[in-house]
Image (cartoon, rainbow, N blue to C red; front, top):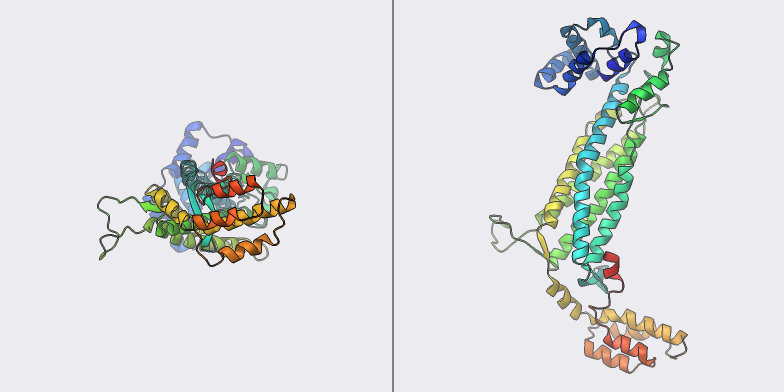
Length: 417
């Protein structure tokens, strides 16, 4: 419909611009598209075996009903199916991403920013390789996810949404045969960009889909980060770091009444895996088309909505899940208090600095602390006694004696904020 309007707006082939009322009637045909049109197309496509050709016949039928037979031959004029479809996919995917998917992602980022700020000072034990490690804060760890997602979101926000409109093999051959004096590439660019999408001037019969590959790879990347978030929160819940807020009437287990299962994060995890697999398949398939055209992209693109649908389910589950947890600071502190050996890093690093400054002659500080702490539980009193006996400066000694696992968090709070 828009191509037909664009041609008549330029008074091509002796036509005159349509009256505004006629343009509105034409646009009403796609704005009010519904079951009657679907049924009409299904019957016609059973004969044509070609979806876009069936749509052309529908348009011609409706033009006749509106008394616009005079311009019927401009329906699908000099276009190939991919001219219609590439513009349709660009419009559809752009609207889906910008109006639905990105806002859902931004909701997650906003929630993570909120939690990062709220828990910026909540010291907790790190677990590198699943083992007790240098403490951090819960806020800083959540801020890492917000930071990562924001980077990918910016790339998605700057995505191109490209369409072609250059005829059967991308050469404007039929256009020039019909009217050789028209600057058809300019007409096509103005038409495509006028719909708010981007124009690809150099293509085969199909738009090359590179923009889709780039977009789906970025969305899959975001999904990977979100999957990491889901598994980390799940693990924090299993450690007791986060308590789940009971939902009235909800059942955690059919046999164990006490259970509150972290189903939001598990559902998100599964849906992100499905979405990622589909997006990966889309990226792998859409980057290639044999010679000037094959139909593998047509079948593949029918799953774009499925891929985004699973991603949206995951985003919704994450949003709900993040709103149904509360931080158990007492559990974090108790965990820190049973792992004083993590201060071994601080002590051996301070000794190294003292040796370098000429205030100590201790040899191989790392080995010294490794012997004291590796595979051993070391308490506060034992570490304090050890530090007291070290050959280091008094200032350094007092700093180490004052240090606890809960205060050994470096710039974590500042970073989170």
